[in-house]
Amino acid sequence: MYPNNRFSTNIQSLQGLRVLLVDNNVHFCHLMTLLLQAYGVEVQTAFLAQQALKIFVQWQPDVLVSDIALPLEDGYALIQQVRTNAGERGEVVLAIAVIDFANEKMLQRALCAGFDLWFTKPFDLDEFVAELACLAIC
View 1 (cartoon, rainbow, N blue to C red):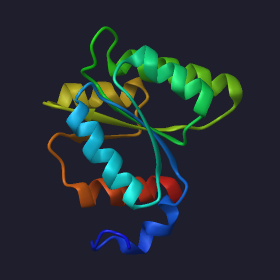
View 2 (cartoon, rainbow, N blue to C red):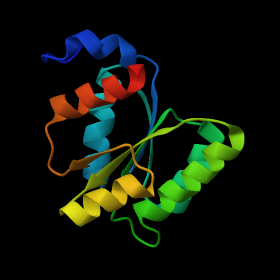
View 3 (cartoon, rainbow, N blue to C red):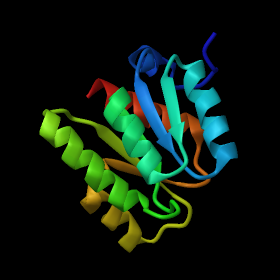
């Protein structure tokens, strides 16, 4: 049974979607993994940009969901590497930035860096799932 929400019409578009979730907050990764798996999404997690890039190359996800504030290399560096790698293979990968605290400049930087969409923590889970479903079917 799927979680009950007003966006259930887009649920089928999430079945089998592959999402790479990158965040150094273990609890956030666990919560998001459980939520997405409830919709039939395949999820892999990483806690560092370099770990995420290795998973990205091997697993080839459909969507990257990445925190901007990662240790060592931030989400901006990660998205640039992902875009380069995907471009070399002729692939399109959707990317969602997750930002702990955002101002207009940070949001614009995320979009200019190559993210398609952004969310500021904490965010509404139903809205996140709806946006993910919309990205998946577009």
